[in-house]
Length: 177
Image (cartoon, rainbow, N blue to C red; front, side, top):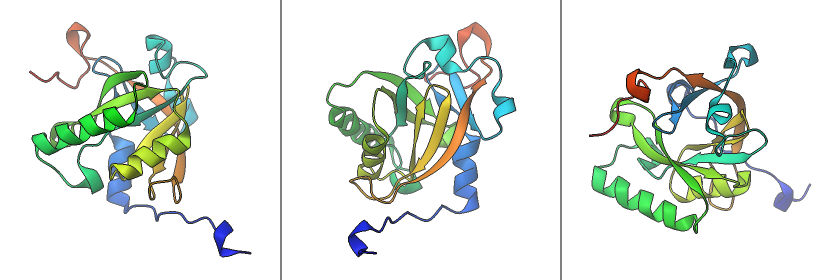
């Protein structure tokens, strides 16, 4: 087999990093979800059913961020500048503002409607992300990024499960004020 046809994949991250990605929440400020690998635990209605937005039935979407490249905490100014470059790189695609994670790992993100898996992985790699989320409807994948150009991505399949919201329509995750 010719070397030019060989597919390379990035190694899976250590268990702690992988568990952090699988254990966090994603979504908009009012509709949060987490990833689950056990189909019966997804519950009756996922974010797409409530929003009718990018994660709606049959729609392709991705959750992207430029915050904290390589899993290294950055200051607010660097993160904001990187996020602005990511949004500019989307060339006007429709997005919903999002939030990934909680606490000190809380990151601004965007939920991008109609993007391809390769484009999502490429943007993740270009902005130094360890992984991006990609999905169609409630089916989701944690896509471990390789290098720009989409080579070397690794995909772990999952489903979206809604996260209960707190009072006054806000999720358990408090708003920034």
